[in-house]
Each structure stands twice: as C-alpha cells, then as structure tokens.
Length: 495
Image (cartoon, rainbow, N blue to C red; front, side, top):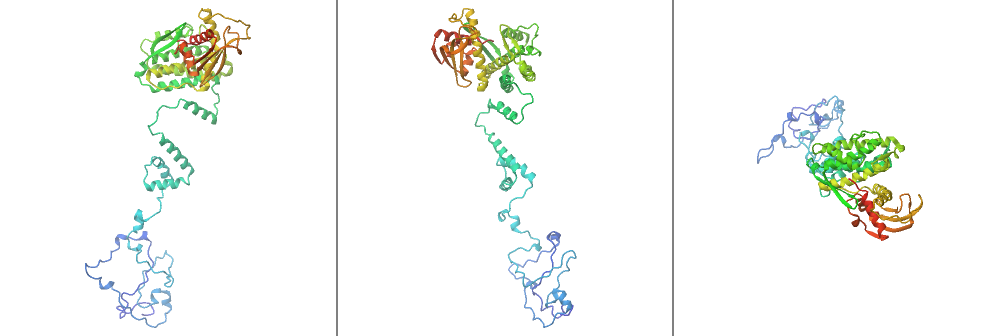
C-alpha cells in the first residue's frame, strides 16, 4: 500500500473477503430501490460463489501512517477499499470502530430495500392508529353505534380522554342511540312540551310571557294540535259522539273529527270578538249561544269538512294567546258573553282549555289514540272554575223547579249552608259550595254534606260524560243537597 492509500496490484488477492467499513449511506427516501440489483441467489444444493467465501486476510505490514492516511480512514489499514464519496450536503461521519456495537444479524438492513415486517404486520406493533381531529370527530356517530373497527375504536376512545367537546358529543350520541330501541311506546310524554318550555324560559325568559291564566289554554290547544298532526286523512271523517246534559237527561250529537274542530273554532270566536279580533262567523249577526253558533257553522259548511279546518282553528288560538299576552293584566277582566251568561276573559280562556281537553279526548277515543289528562296545576284551575260556577247553576235549576227550595237564606257575603266538595288525586283540593244563594259564602262551619270525587271523574261529570248517579265515590250528610249539587255540576255541560 502506498502513502496515497491505494492498493498494489500484487495485494489484490490477499485482501479479498476482508471486512469492510461501509461508507456514508443515503437517506432511505433518496434511494431508487428499483435500480438496485438484487444479490445473486446460490444454486440449488450448491455453495455460494467464490466471491462470497471469505478468505484469510494477509498480515499487515509494519508502516507508519503518513499524513494522507490520517485523512482517509480507508488508508489506515491495509486491504481496505475507500467508500463512495459522501454527499457534500451531509455532515462528515467519523466512524469509531472501538465504540460502535456489533450489528444484529437478524435485524433487516434498511439499505437493501426490503420493508421491515414489524412495520407492516399489525400483529407485530402496538402503536395506536393516529388520526386527525376532524376524522375522529366524524367517527363519533359510528362509534356510538359500535360500528367502528378495533383500531378506530381504540383511536376514538383515546381521543375522548383528552378532548372535552368530543366527549360531550359522544355522550349525547350514546343517549340518542338508546332512543332507537322500539321495545317501548313511541308516544311522546304529554308533559314534554311543558318541560321543554320551562327549560327554555329558565335560561332566557320570554320578553312578553304568556299570562298565567292563559297558560292552560295554550297547553291544551298545543296538545290537541299535536294529536291532529298525527292522524291520517281518512281519520278526519271518523265518527265522534258529543255528549252533554240537558235538565235531567243525557243527550248526544254525532259528528266527525273535523266537525269537532269546527265546533271549537265557532265557540272560540266569542273570545275573538271580545278582543276585537276577526270572528270566524259574522260577529254582528251570529248568535252568542255556543250551541247555536256551532249549528250555524256546521250549516255553512256545504261539504264534509276535512283537515283543512285545522289551520284556521290553530291560527285563531295563536292569535288569542298573542293578543292576551300583549294586552297585559288589564284584559283579564274583559267580559265575554255566552248569551245566557258571561265570564271574564281569564275564566273564558280557562273554560275553553277545559273544552279543548274534553273534545281532545273524544277525538282520541274515535281514532284509538292515547290522551292524558292536563297537568295537576291546570286541572286544579279547571276544577276551581267549575266549583265557583256551581252556586249560580244550582240557583238556576232551583228557579226551573229542578232542585229543592232554599232552606236558610242569608245576606250577601255571609256564610250559609254549604256542601264540602273534596277532590282527590291530581288537581285535588277542598271547596265549600253555597247551597241556598249564590251571593252567600261557603263555610266549613256550616257544611251539611260532603262529597268525595276523583279530580278527573269530577271533570267528566262537569263535561256530561258520566251521570250524577255514577259520579260520587263517597257521600255523607244531607242527601238532597248532595243530589242537587251533583246534578248542578252535570248541568254545566253543553255542546
């Protein structure tokens, strides 16, 4: 070997097969693997070529390295070939033979172009799938339905531990999946609308809230409208039998579902006229009695009404609620005439809420649909209105000779003989009904009889759906007073 580090021609055979120090390698991405020739395979049953058989290396001559050999690592030992010229962009690599560990024979060489099995076989790696946030967010729906692969499930659940918005969305989706089961009833909870509105108003109260005395009418019209949206076109012609009491007997009238909505529209027009709104009938010529108004409305309908009657009725109820809300407290005492009697607007809206619930039940029975009673608070207000109207109804029956005579007249505002009306269940309470004069005041001290009724049963009695004989669950005291009050309650019903 000369000082330039070149091999002599005579030493070529001696250094064949000696260990080489590899030169600097290019980056894996810079290699053109397709242009690299594959190593020759040994012949079947034979040995490797002579070039691959290592031979005994020649002894090293005793020679001090010159200045050039100190610059070229390949020139410091005899028989070593210089490696390829390094890239000018890469830093100079100085091998340290004494400190470098021996290469693992089983480890794949990244320069030979063959992929690492551990990087391609999922069973040989435990690294989780790394997906961007948007992809993981899009997978939440499939994850909630348990439709993700094992790798995607692991990636999503790992992401949920560190992303609060996605964790909240995942919980909501899992709750929504629970609603997909069909083993329960598909009917909505009748209190759902009230709970949703309470939640909305709790977060941001309405600028102009619905008055408390108009809330029952608002709730019952909404419930009936939800029922009407669910029925088919043919069910609008389903027969409905309306029932009420006249004097001592129960009477009925047959109509259809559409006819019932027309009846509600005609009677609600009394409230519209009182507020200065458009009356579905001619306000100047239409009668004030609810029964006569209904007959007039039905007679004006030349063909059987269909679902087309729903929109005018719903628009009219919305307009009533909106007008009452904007008018404030001053409108609550506006008188609404029913012909034979009159009610302040706040009681008239409560009366219309009661009528809407009762006829909603009639429609639900006709189309075989479940229909629940109003909320306890609204039912209590309806019962209270009927209890306040009982003394006048009892006096009217006495004038017609249908009730017993007064036994102890007192001055107006003084306590008189009373009947204790005990309402049990939802909307229950205690009321004392004056027996001898509507101007007297009911008093517990002067109670001569007691009647116990369930709240819904009492409302059915007031609506004329059950007879007074069947109504009372418990009676005690003056039998004549009990009979007169029960028949007076049934006489509050009308078409």
